[in-house]
Length: 64
Image (cartoon, rainbow, N blue to C red; front, side):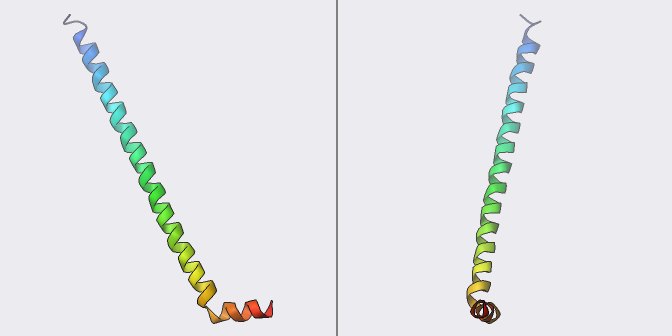
């Protein structure tokens, strides 16, 4: 029994460590995705503002 205990404990510890790393990785990916979405939305709003509000763009569109 004592001989197998360290192996079992090590296995459990390794499982928890792996699980913790997986959670951390998924969290990082999720946060990155959210940041990208927020940045994309902001960029789209900024581009829309430039295209719709800029007189230069309006003049260019009229010439085209």
